[in-house]
Length: 81
Image (tube, rainbow, N blue to C red; front, side, top):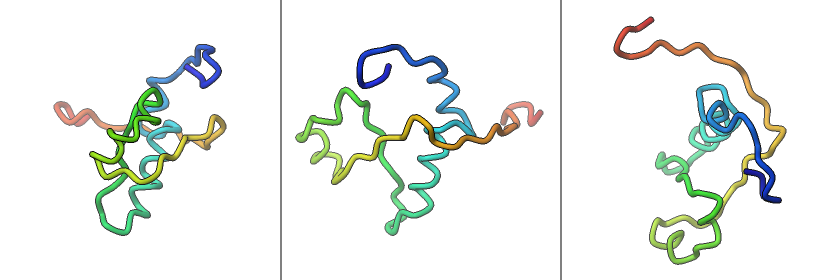
């Protein structure tokens, strides 16, 4: 769902390898100075300051709608196919 409440298609694909969410997470993870990597927070909880503080989150980054994506083929670990 978009911030304005309209439905957004393809959300599951965004989380898959090469999707806009996955690409943004990997970009942030690779630039993390402490090696901890980014934490994931639901958009609906992003204003819950107690939750953020308890998890040590000091800033939230929204993945832009037009973020670049690249389709990837990933082998399933059970079959490696």
